[in-house]
Image (cartoon, rainbow, N blue to C red):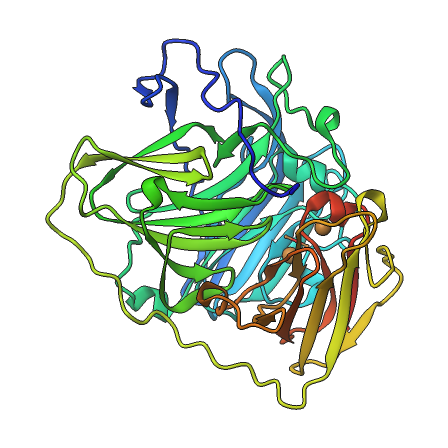
Length: 460
Ligand code: C2O
Ligand code: CU
Ligand code: CU
């Protein structure tokens, strides 16, 4: 099971100095969770918003001692949160200050493919590219990352990833925790390996089936805690890892409520004790801390590893209850819909879709604008073995119809742009593109993507 989390050694092994103040119960130093900044727009009106996003190199202090050479957007590691509204015209000046080509891909955004920043749209060093689109989708937590041909995995590993929060009338009106950094926290979860000089050891740990790290980073923080009140806390979980799957849960298997999947709110909160996210997937969850008192903690876990400690440092009398209804998601209309097959197979440098490896000059599939097609995605188990492939489609939010003929769990009945396909499994998706162009679909294990487990659909 190459996808399971295993033991994250290295957590809390650092921070030997005396600058930390919070220790966990085993005496390990904890660090205050870093929060991505909300990006400052260059200009903003009700109908338009303009941002600049610069890919740049920098140095980040993750550990005591040497800083780590990293990449980031508008900073040294990760990027800011771009907040946009449904209906707004968005203008993003993207700028490449790296020493090599990159691209700026808006994962989960429904936009024309010439704006989507896939491998057809590299930005050379010291070049800029203007990205313009109108937000034609509902409130969701989306993200952005590089996608240049063959370099996605190592550039993401080095730190290139940022967030997009889409807001709309529904998210305005819903009585949910939305105080950024107070009761609403994005958690970009990644795993990295540091070498003896505190540098990311991508090359030394490279695995063509997905590079795993031994140290967990949350928003670039090792062994993080966050100080909160005993209220409802919203965590926007983003699996930003190259390859590792996470099964998030709370200490003592306490329940939580999932309120959103990749592309927006679920119809109703779904009560769970764990949620698994493969690379690229997101889930927003609500943790109810009302039964806790000042001085107590509750940990978000991945199996046996601590992801984040919620430290209750203040009590409040104002308690929210979760809205019973969050969204209205239409039933997919699949009557008479065509069915197309996509088979994921191979391992390592041989990974492929329908027997083909990625070729920028080949269109692998065609679909009409606004036509619903059932994509039947099969993970072939062959002699080479197989693993979970997170299947992602650009430019669209789709619905999961079934897993091996069975209705998907409730928390997968909302909008998705990435879906886990387990070995031997067949997952049926209802896919309706509302934007034209040539869109990528691929495995979101970034090494698989770079190694050719990617193809393209032309939507006209
Ligand atoms: Cu998040 Cu084509 O990727
Ligand atoms: Cu994408
Ligand atoms: Cu894969």
